Amino acid sequence: MSLETKTHFTGLGPLPQPSPKPANHILDLFSLKGKVASVTGSSTGIGYAVAEAFAQAGADVALWYNSHNAEAKAKALSEKYGIKAKAYKVLVTDAAAVEAAIKEQIKEFGKIDIFVANAGVPWTAGPLIDTEDDSEWKKVIDLDFNGVYYCAKHIGRHFKERGSGSFIATSSMSGHIVNFPQMQAAYNAAKAGVRHFCASLAVEWAGFARVNSVSPGYIATEISDFVDQSTKSKWQSFTPLGREGEVQELVGAYLYLASNASTYTTGADIRVDGGYTAP
Image (cartoon, rainbow, N blue to C red; front, side, top):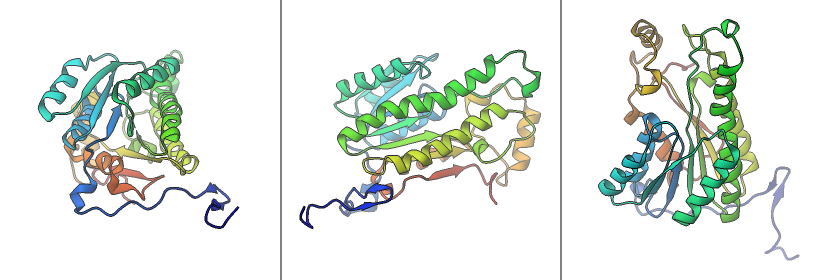
C-alpha cells in the first residue's frame, strides 16, 4: 500500500473527513440551501420552531407528528419560504415505524442531511414512589430516550452510506442538574441519557457524521402548560436571567449545529437555559 493511499488510523479508528472549503461570507456557513432536514416532534413547540428556522435558512423539511396533525403547517412552510415540506405521522417509540418513515422521506426528498430527534414528553406524575404503576416511567423513557435511539440507529445508516450528516438531539438542562421544586427523576434520567448517548455516538460516527445535542432550559411552550404559575415563578427565581426563554432564542443553537458553521463541532452539548446551570 502506497503512502498516498494508506488510511491514517488512531486507536479510535480511521481519521476521515477532509477540511471544508472556506466560505466567501460568514452567513454562507449558516445557509441550509440544498439540504434536507428531518425533525421529530415538530408539530408544535421547539420542534416546529426549529423546522421553521431551517426552512427560513433554505432547507427542505420533513415534519414528524403524532397527536397534533402537522399537514397544514408543512403546507404553510412550503408556501411561505419556497421550500419543500411534508408532514409524516410517526410514533417514534415504534422502531419499525421510524425505519419506514426515514426510508419514505429519503425516497421523497432524495436524501436527509440533518436529523433532529426532538420528540418528547414531560414527567407529570410527581414523586416516583407515589406512582401507582410503571406506565408513566415507561412512557417518558420510551419516548424521550428510546425514541432517540431508534431515530439515530436508522438515520445513522443513511448518513454512513452517504458519508455525511448532522444528528442533533434535544436533551435538557435537566440532564445536567436536578430541577426543583418539581419531582421528575424519570425525565432527568432520560435527558442525561440522551446527552451522553450523543457524545458516545459522536465518537462512533466520527468517520461519516457529526452528533451533538441541545439542552434547553425553561422555554415558553405548550409542554409546560400543566405547570402552575407559582411553580414557574420559582423557576424564574432560580434562573439568572429571571424568566422563561422564547423559542426564537433557542433555535440558533440548532441552526449552528445543522449548518456548515459547525463542521468542527461534534460530541458537544449546547445549554440554552438563561444561566440556570452556570457553574
